[in-house]
Image (cartoon, rainbow, N blue to C red; front, top):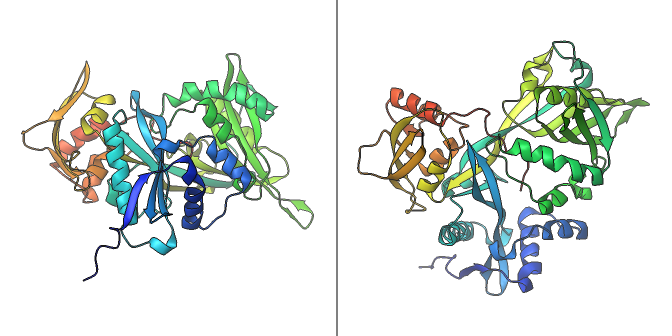
Length: 412
């Protein structure tokens, strides 16, 4: 009888000498070849000590990496392992290599301590649920024709828009972002290095569009919003039909939000505006005279995995005081599974193992999906992904619910 084909695969942390082979395996897994420009941009944020290689002899045939991030949770923030660079090259798929990589990575995160959750953006949404990740922060994409973008109510600008270059954007945008990131679960803080990476504007990332343009919103209180966008050129029969591709729009106030969208919808020589990723509770849908014209679609975005469940649940705030017992099933990470009492009061939250009878029974991935307040337990019950009395689940909904809904602003 043939042995386990994954038994000969060794998982270990890569070294500097392995980076070229690591990149080559990742390119094969995703079917693309990086340019020197892309390598420089990615290397600036690369944390080599957090990257694993699956070795078949001396060859790297699979990869998994992570970034050290801090993500906003309801009422606070927690360190998060930002999982990325996960892939197995075609010659070694269906042999258990990915499972070995993911299990080793989760064990490493747990052993290192300090990060109660992990998060990722999935290249394929069918993969990561089986590793305990839950779809915690969906994102929206939308398109709208410029001539159908009129607002329901007359727009009176509350500030002014100023176009700037990249250097000035790097000086002004981070302060606005830092004030907004603390209010929205699912967003993660950008360091200076991450700002440089996000604005590095690699040619392939443009997908045929222009380099980034930057617009700042200024009010009586100073700069309180910005937009980054590209223009995809298109001319038909001598007529302009350019597309505005919004890379990021961040606003501290409803007034700045409205002014920035009116600016983006009003750019001359354009026919269409598209944006991704955007929050699922986008106010724009309620501001348009023809909301049906906003082609609005929801996709999975940030997936969350609980690593230290008691710490993660105690780290966030809750909307009402209550006490609830969760029976959590987690065959992949047995240290996560178990029965936990969550007690929420004026002094904060406490989560600890308990022998009390369970109020809610669910998989770790489904509790992770609810962690940021983006999905209700009542909905999970209707999806047959949570068990519990309907009245009790409504109490859990009230506890975990949060405004605004979670959103992750950028793929990592």
